[in-house]
Image (tube, rainbow, N blue to C red):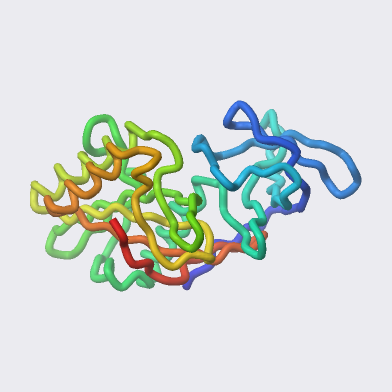
Length: 235
């Protein structure tokens, strides 16, 4: 699978704490503690334990308030992506390379296309006959053993996205919810009904109304991330 490679400097540290959703204090090898941007608004259950090894990216942007972005965390022997922007890039790259068998046969790919009720679809695929495939990508980190789950918090926005996909399917387009699991220590995927039962109910409902669901695991390293295998759904 196509790698999404980080070319900017990366460095490893130890997580001190994550707070205010968007911030994380990290201790570097020399003992200095820096504050990094946390690009994830979710609960990050199981992915924010103090003392864990983490990867920071030096964004090399002097205009930023925080020089570093928190990219990944080490859980056991597995690197786990925490940057919600990464899955969109990974999936788009794999689609462009024709590496997702369920989503081949399209001539062009557009990203962040306006649609629905003031929303933007992550990826819009188009074929020569004018067919459209709307792909909404969800970054996933939550697990129960080897079982990956989404969401890790109540998400009204996530339900809105499902209903917008259903609307696209009702108009004759393909509509796909793509769960990009940012770790490779998993072998199945399902909805986290114990966290947000309304999301799980809506997901099952829209799947009966024409929306498709795909879940893929990813291999993550300090500099790279790529899709590895499709996960069976246990909804």
